[in-house]
Structures are given as C-alpha cells and as structure tokens.
Image (tube, rainbow, N blue to C red; front, side):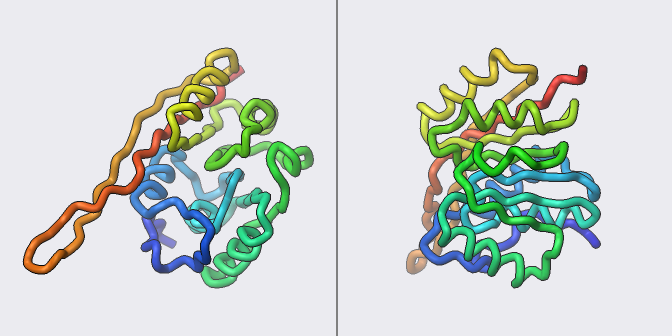
Length: 193
C-alpha cells in the first residue's frame, strides 16, 4: 500500500472538535519519518486526523490515540471506522494519565498537553526507544517557550520551525490567500544510549 500524506480535510468526520489541517499533518508525517512497522502515540488526538494518517503509514505497526474529551473519542472511533483501520487503540484520558501501560514506541505526536507538558515529556522519555522521535506542535509563543525549556534538560536532540499556510480562495474574478494560524513544529529525537 502506498502512503499518501495530507488527506483532504473534508474526508474526516469532524464535528466541532479542532483538527490539524492537511498541510500541517503532511509536514508532521514527514518529520516523523514513519516506517511500516512503527509503534506510535498521538497525544491530544482530537478528531483523530493525525492518528489516521499515522495508522495508514504503519500497516504493520500500531497507533495509540489519547484524547481527554469524550466527543473527540467518538470522532476518532468514527474516523477509524470510515478509513477501515484496525491498528488503532483509543485511550480516553488526559495525558500523562493513560500512558503507564504502553509499550516502547518509535514516534510520539504531542498536539495538545492540557498544561501537563512536563509529565508528558517524562513519559516520552520513558516510552521512546533510543532514536525515537517526539513531534510537538504549538500555536502559542508561551507553549513554544515551555517546550524548548522542558527539552533543554532532557536526553533529546531537537530542532524546530514555524509554518504559515495560506490557502488560495476564489473571490469573484480575483483570488485571495486565506491564512491559517501559524504553527511551530519541534522534532525531538531521543539520544541513543
């Protein structure tokens, strides 16, 4: 099966839960460097759009989706069913709760920390295999600052960048560029022991 990143936003059952947009999801998958047999964790899974993209990319692996809001859990279940995925386990919890019994992982996505970033990164340190990748996103300057402050004293090598996406929209005989919120993406690789 050929992996194609950046599934159209409209393909997901969404409701009123925030969803990571197509262009950002595609870049997150590029940063994750997923292999077909990887084991993945998606924290703050929301609608499950990243969970779905990852699960399609790891047909021999497995994806754990952690979401604290029940309406998000329902959407993740519906989206997994829509995409015919059987390699996803859904955990209803506010991370870092719900992470204690997970196996060693290759990739962790952190899309929302709910103010519990230190505890989440403690678990990422424990769960990630050496060379494993933690992909963190933030939309606020404060969260970006917290991520970099937390990572500087942990066994990770990290880099980051900010993305700004503007989508072309027809307006009569003209075209406008509609901006999406800028997002900072930080990729932290666990140091090999």
